[in-house]
Amino acid sequence: MSAMARTASDALHTSGYRLTTQRQMVWDTLRLSKKHLDAEAICTSIRRRNPRFNLATTYRSLEVLEKLGLVKQTRIGERGYYELAEEGQDHYHLVCDECGSTLHIEGDHMVPVLHHITDEHGFVVSTADLVVHGRCARCQARASR
Image (cartoon, rainbow, N blue to C red; front, side):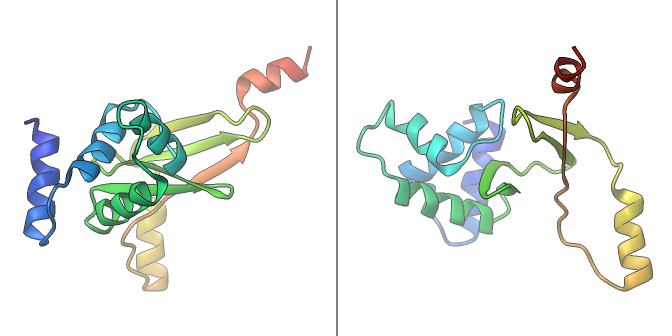
């Protein structure tokens, strides 16, 4: 069992949950993905191996995994996209309004802003998710032709 799978199993067990087959399938789908997935994409991926898997089970599994801090959701437009919540892996999203591509910017660029929010406004931040909309370099180049 990998360290990440062991972490999920331990976190679930410590909180009184089991790592069910369904939760394991959702976890593995997110762990193996190179991009954020919405619930429908997760379910579709799992159905390739298990045709009886349903969307309600996907949402229930995501809800538990998110509640325990193992998975995080990013809202982009009307949809929620999921990924593993890894410590020290903060990243932010640049979303192209033309082609829909999402670019991840990693780093601690938001740390000064978060400190300002706490220091100046007395608001203690538990999590932060930044989504910036605009036009990607490829779409800009295409428009200037």
